[in-house]
Image (cartoon, rainbow, N blue to C red):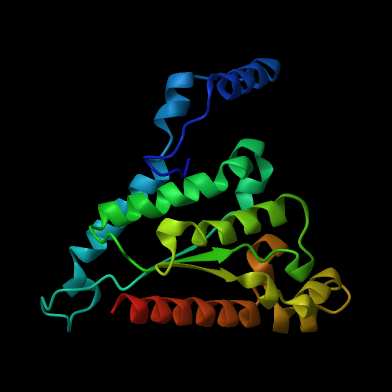
Length: 213
């Protein structure tokens, strides 16, 4: 489970519901194993960051021990959280914990942090997609994150043309091959979407860096 170490864990009612569901499906369930899983992928992520920073000369041979600066952190995630009421309702709280924990572990209290708000459904978001995107936007508006966290609204970059091409990919595979390569949850693999999104992320990091300096 990708939750920050300081995040709030599920209450007993939630755990009991999972246990009851497992029993109904005749599947094994261990509360202890379930709880131990919290933060597992967060820890793997930080281990990967530490290992990379410790081998900079391997990844960048010309670096030659010149030191480094972590100029910013970009987080673009959220789709799977829409399928859990618990994850949806606690998203903003956990996102705030995530930012605090990353900054603590990277020893950078004011590390510029960019959140990519979910862009699925484009400018006509609804349901849990909109709830999560709103939570991502609200996180950057928390007083403690003013001036050091920015949320980029990626919904405006949603590639409607790629979406139409996906729907008609069997009838017109050539157009689909030009515009996309994946399903909607991966933004159709649209190069146009990711180019605009990546540029917006970079500009946000630069903006936060200017404020930091």
